[in-house]
Length: 294
Ligand code: URA
Image (cartoon, rainbow, N blue to C red; front, side):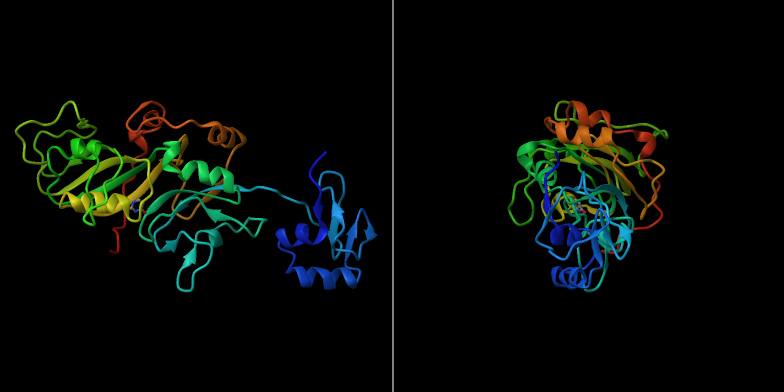
């Protein structure tokens, strides 16, 4: 048997009004359970067995909602904001009022963002203790040091003195480089640096970065500490969840049962390793049309 829930909580969570509005509506006989008027909003309802209606319309109870959004630039990762549109406002099919984004992407960052009301899952995905890889595609301006990947692997000392956890860097392309063929990937790891090289040359480097933390402006500050500037940033994946190639900025879809099961049972691995690395599909690296604003 499903868990019972108070009628007022049921209707407030399903967006039918505030608790006092729901109470007033019940007093006026606008709420029915299995076709019978119910005036007592403290009464408990079994959502699996009883049918609640409001002004003659059935109101089904949805406990949890999960959406994958491709966050566009110019929208904030928040539930409300005075100046910007929020990511939650983009989910126009939502039924619950308590949805929130799992983690934050900067206003000028695009990419994968999970929107849900499942606090337990959010905690598991965000806590660095759970080692969930967050993979970003970035375009970086400036001279990227030849040992950048080694530095990422060791942990970067940010300008405020904070040291980051080990992260993985894969340089996809550096525009100033001779002999670079489309599709070439420079994998620079702690074991195999590009010896004798000062850096990857001036120009835009296209990189994939994997981190397991979510410090404020983390990826941008990691490159800043190396004297570079991130001019475009997009999150490609979070643990086993990968952004669909065809999902345009601003588009969202419900999580599939399979994806939800994967996320709930996911056991993180060390950065740069195994499972999440498999989810890097070079074919899905975007061709950006817009640059960051700041
Ligand atoms: N790192 C950043 O700098 N910004 C983001 O939005 C996400 C990670």
